[in-house]
Image 1 (cartoon, one colour):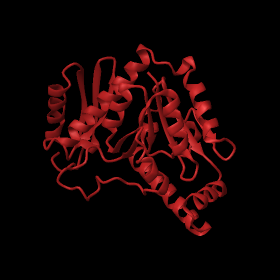
Image 2: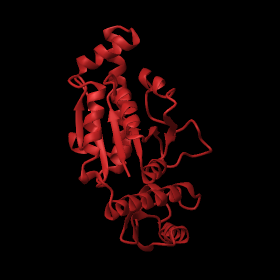
Image 3: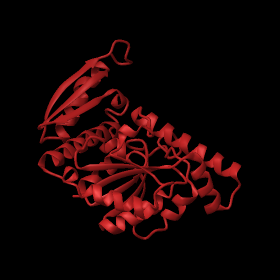
Image 4: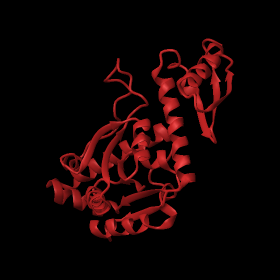
Length: 272
């Protein structure tokens, strides 16, 4: 059950690496753009829209017939795709969402700024100034998305199992190294790792449920969920009326788990 989560910097030939990797592993290649969980159907232009700057190589990637062109995905959809296995998730968010799942290999493809500028100048036929500006904009957008959703820095090497410098390695070299690493026993799935992913998926299901229900949508950002060993724990500070409303909704929809309600009333909350 191969699952690889990959991110890359603009101008590092990461799209080529991903394409070669999916071919060699015969794995689904999913390009995704992380959006709010879930988007508000009544507001398609507000804060639920994708926070990213599209760039030249993504436009090419989307025309690749081997890709599963999901485009915008919620955290729940990303985790569902990972749960099906045999997939390479390339985009913003999968690495953080799947971080710590034992059998998931997290990869970053990077390169020095000057090498990235040279690659974008060659690929797009633009000036050095234009290439640098687009790379800096893309990096800033990437940083903003991950900071907003997870409070993390996507450039932190500790977020990854592998960090590959494509200035020193060809896309084929990168793909070969990833294939070799993915084949190691440490990245083989087992009952414990599958359970860890299943629990992460349950947490995402509950977050999406609370955010999507008119009964709990307003309080949802204040609710934290932890699933482990057949038990779901709800914690956080919400309004007095929300404490039982939230727990009752979760129990009605996630019947296979025992629900522990550790929600508390927050002083000063609008309906406290």
